[in-house]
Length: 214
Image (cartoon, rainbow, N blue to C red):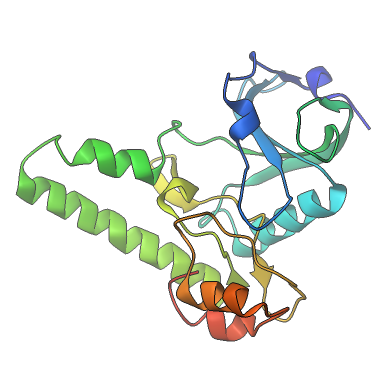
């Protein structure tokens, strides 16, 4: 195990850092911080997890779907010191290093900023092209047998100018056990909502992957 600060330069944490990674229907908590690689000078995203199992799950799914769809995985390790946050699961000691997005602007902010930015025709063309890219990303994930389970505008960000899907912590691979799906309030696929309302313990993820809602 190696301390994060031996490899990366970390800026002071943001004031709202404790709110990051909060998801309804799950106790999983994560924290994402930007840092600078001391060797290369590149900006990277450090995602801290409560457990090695959660970190390794997201790493494996990211590697499965590939860097054209999701952030590229650079490294993962256990941090001797961790991050002391009030997460309900103790210090966050398990780190996944990924490529950093171009900016902190997600699809949610992009849509909000694009609406008043130009002519109606220009905005419609731009949003139509973006929607096509988003749908192609979700289709690509499903084609690989992965169900994201937490699709929402905030989980799309641009990397080198291209939109990618982020935060696969709640995802499931078809055929693997997933007792109860996690979700974000206000963004829950009808199939998942029905499962939760019925109190079901499991579902057919291959069937869920057939739609674009999850």
